[in-house]
Image (cartoon, rainbow, N blue to C red; front, side, top):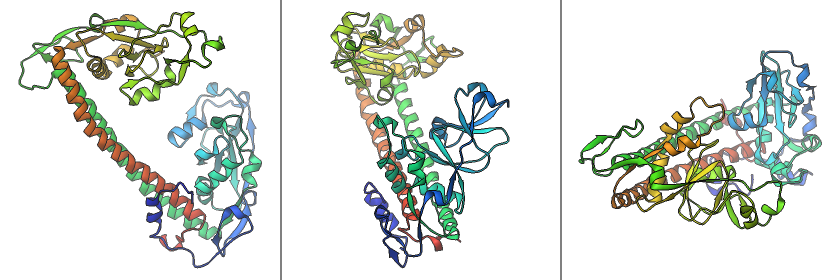
Length: 450
């Protein structure tokens, strides 16, 4: 097992017994294996099958495509039109083990099945036909942490994000190999255990969804209805808002905050992007913007020269940023002076609206933003629509009370979400640990399967 395996996972594994006898094979990195297991190279039980096909050779109306992204996202391939295939692929003619050459540390491995339509896979996969082993045992063998670590140690790559193993690295790797009946017992055991763990993970992921929905509802209610349920209400005249407190105003955001657009300094001028010290918010910051309220550090930095020779300019601290392309509606408040790409706009808040309050209002506009982008081929919100967005306007003192209330109550929900995410992490660690322990013979599961 990996040194990275958590102590909790190790403790869980102790409930399984070990084999009666072990031996140390001549292949040092394998460590000890059950005494009755053999040591074999992968090419002794897996046959590499390379059947390359060009897009022009596909005449069917539909294909089933195992691409790296689809497998990473869903664990399976997708049906596609041949017109979407723009490079050579490999044909799948039966049940095959697909092992990704790309970034082997990630363990993108699956059992692929031929469909009723032509079935293909990316050339970044290595398709194997099993020969003298159980197919699902082979799947778990390549999912094992020890196998992934070993392949990662021999990759050839120019960058860390594009590591690639050669076919020869995969087929020449040595493994401890049980008999086929024992392989089937190991695979059956792991099928059962991983299914149980996956079911628990799904339940906890659903719990996170419910907590985040509660979090969102809490914010929306606070910024649109206020904190006093007894105050009289009035119709706002805006569908997504509904009723708001009678003493609140309603006005377009642009009257309460100065609207600023973004720009990109010329990407072809390297000096604008080398050793930059000015944060530049772009779509590369999408993941960060999903998580944070405040942003100061960005994936890409530009230079003062880049700003001076473009329409980009530095927005002041505490500007509310808003993405209007791609992932629409991502928001954050600047913690420092930043520039933004044309995919973003910024609102520099005036004295009548607090940036945090505007941030929460924008995050409550999901329904309205969907309406404004519905049917668009390219998902974007045009500047006229941006300028038409309205916000409730409580008195500033009430905005500050709402901000405090949201922070306090949201933090309790966030703490619960954090605990559930920790539990999911531990379950996934245990899943990885039990796979590695079973296929490397650290635990004896033969009597675990009826």
